[in-house]
Length: 507
Image (cartoon, rainbow, N blue to C red; front, side, top):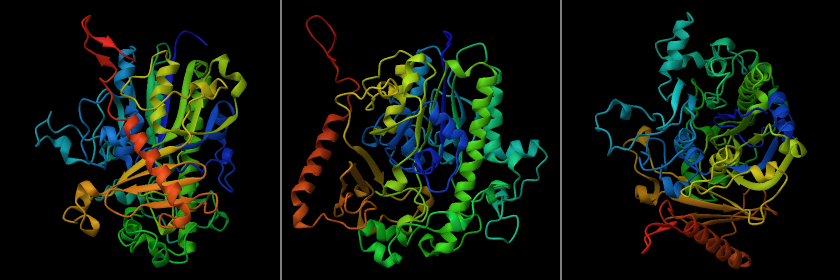
């Protein structure tokens, strides 16, 4: 390894944590990601801190829980005072590049409310140098298609309509012109120009985010008959009996948000339709996996692999029909459990190559991990902790024993005019989750809590919150959650104090 240290942060979108063949998925094959797993450390129990994209990416790139950064939904502004990974990289002399998006809405106190950046669902988080954007309007991608002579339809999203009438039809766009190819081509172009100087690249892929339709040949990578069936109650009505919020979403989520030609509610999909959807989703993963392999191969060919830290992760997961739900929402693991792989090129990491870590890790740990590898302390406003001790074969004595995430179900711009469910105010549409190997507790601001015994009920079907046999456990986990919130209260300046000798650093 040379003195040059590069950072490649690969962030995919909506990739479930269980859909990695290295972690023994029953049918999915991710050979290129598996190769990275064999040469790095894989974190089996890695969770995001929020959903959908904006809250998840805010936590990933600031190292803060949602209760601190308060980007609670897509379109909700980020306070301009918050630190982020790009700022920290700049302090180290890097010009952090980004392919993709961060779904960040700017602080309206710093811009005119008429600023056109507020016309889209999200813009770019400050500090990043955008090499190739893929913002919510997707205009840069569509312009790239036009540059390649592609006839973009009047509704550009129609490129993701089925090319034929079969149940597993490919999308109308060819693989060489897919959004995954767009990201890879721009990422490789950047890397080719940075061979002789340190670089940091956030390489973002839109997939396997909806629309759930893959280009050929990836649409045929999986037989729907071979994919796992959804884990769900006998019918949506039975599922909805668990909790009012779940019942609300069962009657709210439309297939149109997941399929360009979708009709009806997501909960109305039968098992064959869910299997077809899963085969398409796995096909999108297969496509991203192949492109990740292209990027890693280039790093090896150019001699940069052995001085580059590679972190592979996602922003959030996907229900994929489990519990009769589509999308990323609520409190089920499927929406918040995500992949995480760290490949450290240094000799110090040789002993752990191929290891799988079972300890609970979180998206807020990504920023401290990258900064630790670059020799910088974790900023005090960051709630996460570096994963580098695990890469060195050590488990910190005080490592967390559980994970936390939050979800806010207030309506956002796409639901304008739709009031929050059950007469709640927008500031009551909040839940927090604490989950360990045995139990999961879900606390709502203004709705009944949930408590699951995961050893007896691993897929969280039976709410035990009102079961007298679990009363003490519910209290214990409510207290743990309160302690967590107190410990991670905003602390940017709480490590300093004025004194007769001037400003002192306390910690």
